Image 1 (cartoon, helix red, strand yellow):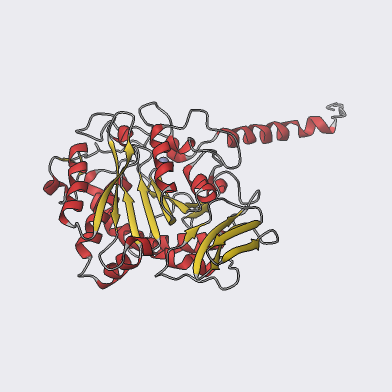
Image 2 (cartoon, rainbow, N blue to C red; image 1 turned 60 degrees about the vertical axis):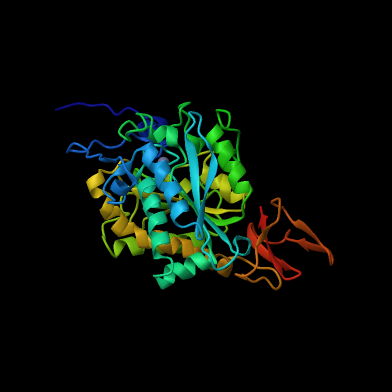
Length: 410
Ligand SMILES: [Zn+2]
C-alpha cells in the first residue's frame, strides 16, 4: 500500500508562484516602451528608398527628397504662390539645417482674422511617412486653391501652417543625399518627444534641445487652435494625455478626441479597411492607455500652449519604401484634409460661458495663462471678471466686447 503524508502548506507558499508571476508581469509592463521607440521592423524585401534629386522628380511622388530638394521645394511653393502662402523658418537645427513651415493663408481674408491650424511631422527623424505626406499636402492644397471649391473654402477660412520636418538632423543623419541613415534622435541623440517641459512631472533628462526651444518659441508666437504631430511605427490616433492613463486623469475633451480620431480612421478605411488596426480595433487611443510617457510634445502643447494637439501614428513601418508612398497618400490624404476642418468643431463641444461663439471673421485671442479659476480681461470698455473655479478642466471660450477669448482651465 503506498503511504504518503500530507504536509501543511502555508497559504503564502501556495500563492507564491502567482505573486511572482504578477510581479514579473508588472515589471514587464513598467519596462515596456512605445512601439515607435523600437527600430523599424526588418522588411522581408530590400527597402526601396529612391531619392529625388530635383523638385520635378520629387513631384512624381514616388521618392523622398534630398535635403537640398526639400528646401528648394518649400521655397518653390512660396515663389509660385506668393498670394497664397509664405515660407517661415521656425529655426535652425543643431547641425544648421532649416526647420521650415509653409504658412498657407489664401488671398481672401487677412491672416489676422482666421483661426490657425498646425501640422508638424517627423520629430523622430526616421519616421518619414508624414514628411512625404506633408510636402505633398502643401502641393495639393496650393494646386487646388481656386479650382476645388472645398479646398478653396478651407484655405479661405483657416490659416494652415505645415512643418513637414521638425528634426532634419535625424532624418538626414546619413547625409543630405539620403534618408537611408535616418535616426529617431536629433544630433545630440536626444529624443525630441521626451524633451519638452512636463506640465505634470519633472524636467526632461536633457536640457531642452535647440529644435524644441525654437518650436516652443514659434507656437507661442501664434494662436494655433488645433494641431497634429505626425509619427510612424504604428497606426493609431493617440490623443492626450500621454502622461496619464484614462483611469488616472481623463482629458476633458476625450469624447471630442475619440470622435475626431474615429472620423480620421473611418475615412482611411474607406480606402483600405485593414488600416489602423495594429494597436487596437478602433485605431484611436488615449496616449497613456497605450503607454505612459513624460515630457512629450502633445501634453506640452495641450496644457501650456492652449493648442489641441493629436499625435498621429500614420504607418506601421517607420521608413516606408518609396514605391508604397503613393498608396499612403491615396489612403490618408482625405483624412488629413478633413482633420484641418475639425477646427470648426472645437467650440461645438467646448463648454462655453455666456455668449460664446466661434466667429470666423474674428480672431480668437488666447488668454495668456492657464487658470485654476479667476480670469480678468481688461479692455477699453473696462475690466471683466470671470471665475471658472466651479467649472471642469478644459478649454473655454468667453466673449468680451464681441471678441472670443480662449481660456484654459486646469
Ligand atoms: Zn515617433
